Length: 229
Image 1 (tube, rainbow, N blue to C red):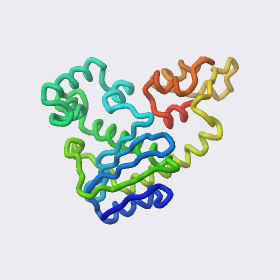
Image 2: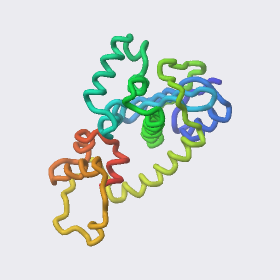
Image 3: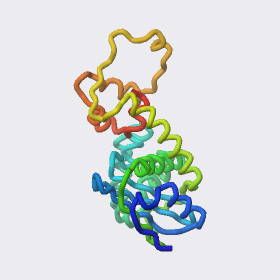
């Protein structure tokens, strides 16, 4: 099935539904005509097993460190082992090595990989214009570690995030915005219980650093960070 055009010709949700219902295998390539950002989505029999966007996205290893699931030393050791095995294109993925070394549980790896897929796809679903091309049969085997997401789940999660993002944008219209902590918090603030990662983010709200700077400092994606703020 040849599919090539622009996001003005086909909506991304329609493309996903078509590829999912047809149980297609191949890779969808996207280029944002406004920012030149690129995205890749890999399908196997209609399910998404890999998605990447070079717009606001951290590698899986850095996400694991930021979430305090692995230490930087454990990640560095896994990366060194990966290089000894032939590099990412020939050896195992970093996540697989961490599981094999009993650093990470298989279910945790699955959760993080699926989260990474959803995060990358959320980036792509926000694009207003871009070039799209589906290449039948193009499957990067090195990216397939046996974890995938159904198209139905992709669309449901993307719709949920897009709805939340519309509400977030009303309060945070730009990632260039600079915020400062309130010296007179509301009464309900005493009932708020934050995770360590959330405290880490809030410590950067200093009246000087914009949200883009905070994202780089805490290795967090814009959707998650803006939800916390």
